[in-house]
Image (cartoon, rainbow, N blue to C red):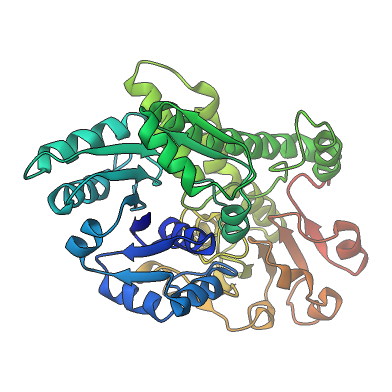
Length: 431
């Protein structure tokens, strides 16, 4: 079987890589000619550790190709993965215009049986809608199946997650589709779950929403830890030793961001409302996340006596390390508030960049962390890039105007930072 990937963004490029790596012939299709030209040269248009090297390797071998030719690509492939974007609309629901366009393109250009697989995160019931869109757009009836195969990729860890997944979920309403899709994953040793398409679609939303709930729970608990003079990181360590809980996603901080958690939680809550159901826990999860960055700002504001006329060094812009994704990044909320309250903001991130436009013209973007620190009245660490852990903070203190440090990711050793002369505050550090 030959595999076509429609959409070559984060999910599409990673999916193309993993199937090429496991021996299949793969083509990536996209309407963005510039993006396709870069990929043909083995170059990525986003930052993801290890992915560019593997794509370049399979482009050179000929196992992985890229094209903008819809007609030839759709006609020439047996299995078609839809990996296009599903951005949130104004009402918080998923915008399926790109999914529908992909379905209609498939309908117009298919020349025989096709297995169409949704890899994009889509609302429950989308598989049924895709079937209808294809049937309506076909010039003449041709057989096809539509299945769901949600992705479970962590930004910054996509290669590891794609090549060594902890589970594979297949949503199919017929044996033919299920068996063909399972055959693509025959070399994977992880558990494989075959369900109805609606179940597979909901598994993705439920998984991300549960992880977001763990994050918001710990962020709420961190506030109590500060009141009780208890270190939330030690609490998390003790909780995580319970195998029913596990250590993942128990780190208190500035909240979650990125392309998945905010969108998926919001869309699941929206789906519940449309179906006359309440997901009150998730509504609180969103509320906690929206306000979490204000908690660190309140600590800094109190210490500095306000931000007006103060110089604040912001370390980290991406919502997490090892990615350039700034969607829903807590650092953006912090920068916005600092600017509104009259602070001079200096920003350093090793990979990510501010969005264009007038909103951030006042931000001084620095080439090195040391440039951001120079003469600053406070440091606010927003992304736990490993490079920040390698800074000699005792030496860096000499650069600062005032040694005030607000660690939004509890990355550094609080006791050491205080011992070498910093006023140090984290999230739930117990002080």
